[in-house]
Amino acid sequence: MKLLLLDRDGVINQDSDDYIRSPDEWIPLPGAIRALARLSKAGWTLSIATNQSGIARGYYSEQCMQTIHERLRKRVEAEGGQLGLIVHCPHGPDEGCACRKPKPGMLLAIARHYQVAPGGLWFVGDSASDLAAAASAGCQPVLVKTGKGVRTLQADLPSNTLIFEDLPAVAHYLTEPSAE
Image 1 (cartoon, rainbow, N blue to C red):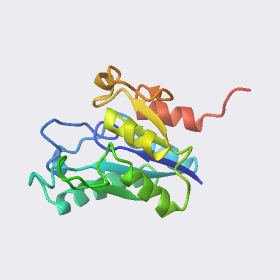
Image 2 (image 1 turned 120 degrees about the vertical axis):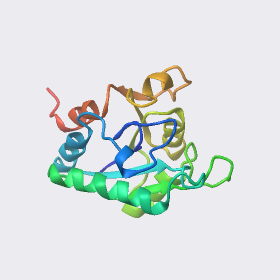
Image 3 (image 1 turned 90 degrees about the horizontal axis):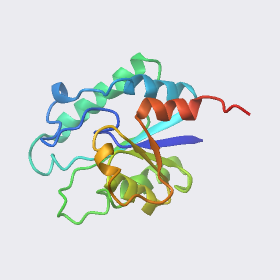
Image 4 (image 1 turned 30 degrees about the vertical axis):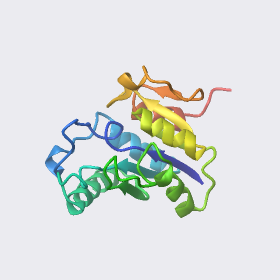
């Protein structure tokens, strides 16, 4: 199974320090939906792991978040692709849960769901917490320069971090046959 794990905000859609509070505020990044569809059509199973502390903060409801995820699924399907499991952490940063990135809980849950070992799986994110979660779970950390990605370049990255401009660049890398 070719399984790719992705963060949502800043990787697939625009991020906001004020949170994505409604479906109308959810705006895909240029080329991201097509990139997801391209990966899916190339045989990749796509799964999303996203911190959503706005739920704990009362900024939006679980139902609102589910509506956003349904919109995302429909957009990918309209391009001929499919999304797999979407998991989220609804907790605030001080709640001490095991799922909120930088902890690896969501990534490990996805690996369990698909009955694969997390080692070798790629996790594509834009923040230091994404990369830390990937490293902690034994996944390959992948940084995109969208969202918080450029700022994250200044952080102490795991030594094996792969860096791409954006999600379409990741899709191109994973779907183009290598020149041998």
